[in-house]
Length: 81
Figure: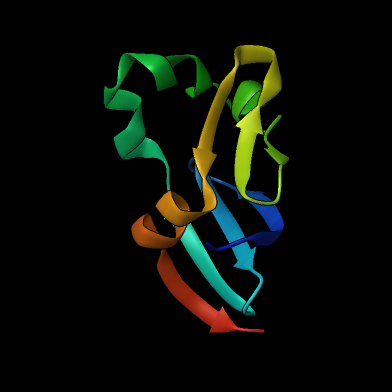
């Protein structure tokens, strides 16, 4: 199971995620907005409230989360850190 070392919100509803193995991936979150549970995140301020839970990211105020494994599978490699 992957773990997340760091997350950074990027413009255009993108997340930069650094995993425990040093690999940095970019996740384009826009495709998630087609699912009703994620629609509330389609606001810059709400999206930016994301928190790192280690094995997941979360938006605690909205009870929304995604696993590190999902982010790993959906992300695009940027660099090894």
